[in-house]
Image (cartoon, rainbow, N blue to C red; front, side, top):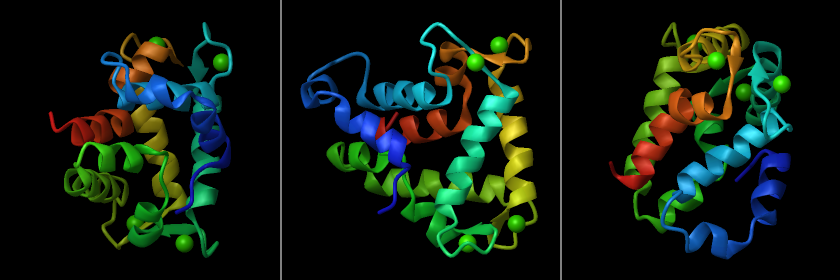
Amino acid sequence: MKTLTATCALLLALPVSAIAQSEAPTPGRQLAEVIFGSIEDNPEGAADMGEFVKFGQEIFVSMDYDEDGSVDLGEFTDWDFGFNFIAEDEAQERAYETAQKTLFAIWDHDGNGEIGRQEYHKSMMWDFRRADTDDNALLTRDEFLSGYVVNLAYRAAITGR
Ligand SMILES: [Ca+2]
Ligand SMILES: [Ca+2]
Ligand SMILES: [Ca+2]
Ligand SMILES: [Ca+2]
């Protein structure tokens, strides 16, 4: 299982109790906050499109295991932010797997079974704009948590709601 190293390190740095014992925020939300921290290191700051796309490109490179410039479903589902561990804890692996496949299908615009660089780049821009609800070209932590499609899809799947 490959995981973005920086995110993984950040996640491991969190005390287990903070993930396991808190009632609200949920583990999924906490993970999403850690992910936002890897895009924007200023806790009061917001991510612009450049920061967001750079974050996405790093993930793309780390997902593309055979380095052929596109991500197939196997590469896509092997890679994980850490939502998979939460899904296991919550016994929602099946729902999580479905969410991964759904997201893959959304990003694979031409439906050829691979997410190419262009498709991915376009998706990152669309997903940014969709999450940027006040349309100011900046993604705040709140906008990211409540509007970024990856957070929405995976958190809904792992909580079963
Ligand atoms: Ca920023
Ligand atoms: Ca590949
Ligand atoms: Ca494609
Ligand atoms: Ca905004």
